Image (cartoon, rainbow, N blue to C red; front, side):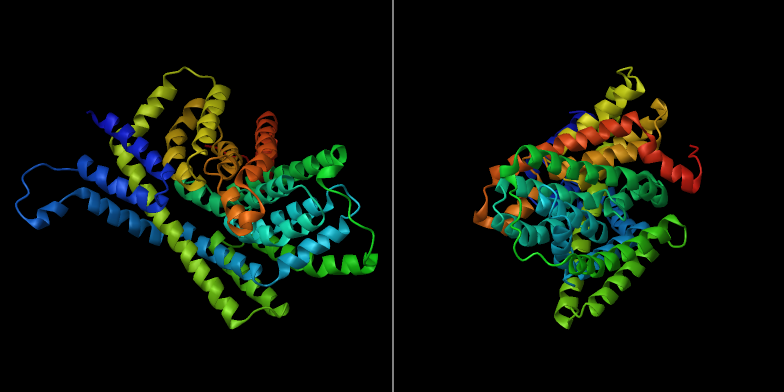
Length: 455
């Protein structure tokens, strides 16, 4: 077989192993080393045991591991994770959810709206889809079930809302994208603000409109035991304002050029601990849990990077990237056709793969073509960021559905969750269409803050 054929075999085997349930990070690593051993084989007989390791794939693996550890952009990841875990354990989110519910109780689907708003706020503080979906599954789903909400409808709200954290800054996914595409994380954060708010707003509009025409999905709450307005707004003030101020300070310091993402993340981690102390919820046990979960998630992300970069390097060395790039380049496409084709491919990849593998392995295939088709790389990044929302919502992977199923267990069937999240896929696609028609949704804010982008 020629090398490009080996590259396609490598990709096909990887997708097959992922579908069979093998751990993604170590599957990437194993496939990269195995096929890399073939790709970088220097020939000659193996005369001793040490000759087995006389292959450049091991040097590549070592360099990739070192590159991940020394990358200054990636330092922000564990700090943002720690901020999210501390905030999660500070009991702020449950206060915020019920305060938002009381404030919105006169709107159709008030509990669902409160869940979406809480997801959006908590997602920006956490950026961990699994943590947001899990916590809201434990917090919001029982409340909506007790109010006789439709279970499938509830699950769709929680799964879709929980994915907002990979889009709305400060987003870990955007940090990863900046490292891969060599783009400014500041511009990426600025570009993601309005698309993220637009998507969250469309989710809320959808909930209100659907419940208005199908009120049986979310019955109006009983009028008994309603706190006085002053108490409602006071509860909302003490739960909503501190968290949003912390997020605003973190994001504002990044966009204002006062701090790097890592420095702002460190400030956010400290601010999260201060909030936990002020709410009298910080204990030694909770602090240890936050540190442990941060270390665990960071290790997973780091090994995912090492595996993905090793896999991508070998795949490219074998000619896999060239096959796809030549195929796309030889189709004589218009810029809009290239954008549509790229997004369709990324959308389809979201069925078997998670956002990290798509981002690290496949997005670099399209990056060299952006200049050929005259596409703004930050605009393309926002299309990809929106599209990657679907990787959490499309079966069979649909990780947000599995996160929710994991905490609800027998309370709901997986197919009910899948039915609930389908409308939100359409909303994501609608948002992408709107952003394509009106690029200023993504580009106006970064151009205003940092000047018009010049390649």
